[in-house]
Length: 227
Image 1 (tube, rainbow, N blue to C red):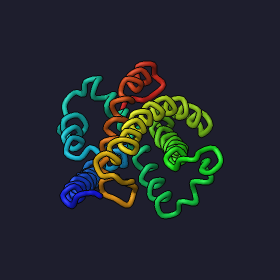
Image 2: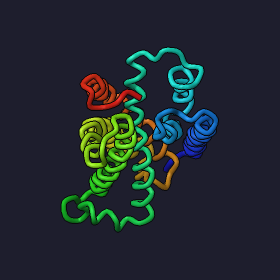
Image 3: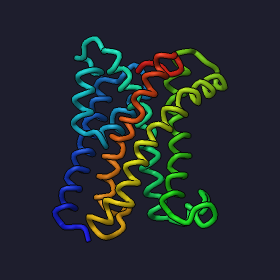
């Protein structure tokens, strides 16, 4: 059973993330970024990175920011990927929680006997589709590409980036699901619990860590635009 103080602390951390996301949404209205898709990236990433994201924005992306070092540009490109993952995971985790039958479309009961693997499959499919859309609206306008060329460029930019992000995210959530939650709470923790979503916040940070170097290469090679 999850102790009351753990649930309370989890709710506080989630509220902090939501508060930071609302703040970033307000900032986007006041100071719209040149790249329109970033209006969604900053608030979505604030959900898991909270005050760290707010600090990074003002230091390296806001109107008061100075020259942006390449390392910070890579971080912004990585966050661009993370926004798509965040949106897809929010939708998918809640969908699977409230309508678990949907997991049969992603292998539950046929390919997988364990729910979490079907869940991860659905997460990946939705995250990849969302990420490609995000990349399209970053790349196509800057390069003046046709729809077909834009989609092809978005796929090249997003598959490696998103997959490397999911490696870190799934790695931590697997650790939490199979080891941490059973040993600490002696029970399954799902999307109905605030503890699950705090674990997802940490998992997103792990995803950022594993996606950073692949994004460095993608941007250096010209496959992905600097943000």
